[in-house]
Length: 266
Ligand code: NAP
Ligand code: MN
Image 1: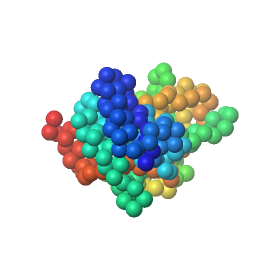
Image 2: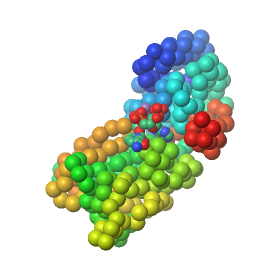
Image 3: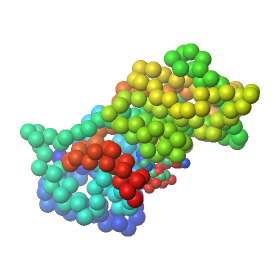
């Protein structure tokens, strides 16, 4: 088995990575940053976002695993003290006993600009905001006009991202077995003149939402921790991606337990 490591570059993460390399070498695991079978993210949820975007082109055959060197994360559920068990479980898997994988949906947008169309993927979410001031945009769902949005912006999240920015916006937490994206408003204006739905909504697979920003408006476009080029954007199509992220599931840690541990039993 070949593995790569993406780490947060603080002392604990660096030391944990070195420890993992030592144990992995003794167990016969092969370190390969270019074409790994498993990517071990060491740091926090933000580190997993980096790992995801570093191996975007290999999503179909790479599985991710997260070690948290700070607080318990949604993507990072192994403790630094457990890397030996982790490496042993990885080494024990093989052609006859493959790693257990869970595959979770991710969000996709197609950005149409004056100079062409690009496709982007997000593990957590995309946000569309006005660069200075409000975002004014027409929203269509499945090619039908839905609403005219005025406010700070719009957040389009995957189920994995529902516990991140989306949660701060009052969006629902979605179990990642559901193939859906959530569209949440960021401070929409609602009064006698301007009207939006006001609550977040879920789109199933094969539905799409198109965002048409008012012409001439400067936009801020984000995918996870990244800022995307936003010049000359005509429309943004949001949907559940055909691609998924694979996590190596070496032990059971139910999603709702994670939610409880992260937000309730602090
Ligand atoms: P950051 O500023 O360190 O992230 C903000 C917090 O979100 C961190 O505590 C991070 O955990 C946590 N987080 C990331 N993904 C999560 C998930 N899927 N479920 C629960 N918590 C999650 O920046 P970052 O680490 O680069 O992360 C970028 C993310 O920050 C974005 O994708 C967005 O979701 C989030 N964000 C949230 C707000 C908000 O809530 N108002 C605003 C902007 C961005 P770690 O400390 O373990 O990294
Ligand atoms: Mn972070």
